[in-house]
Image (tube, rainbow, N blue to C red):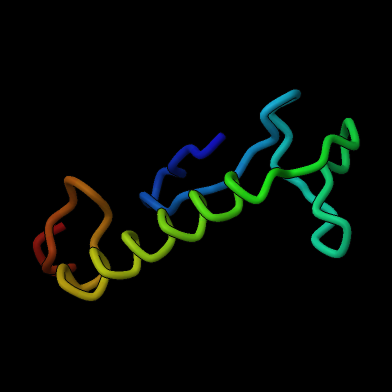
Length: 72
């Protein structure tokens, strides 16, 4: 499951329990031990790439925020 934090960055959460903490060596959820699927990892990597591309074009502004920090 992918959700977006307040800054707009994607975060991966466990499909079973919603936990956001993973053992990256074993690709399992720390809370319930569920294995993270290769599809979920690929989907998350794509979301990160889209986020990076958006950040590069808008200067790092959060979605809906003014691009110019002085305008805040």
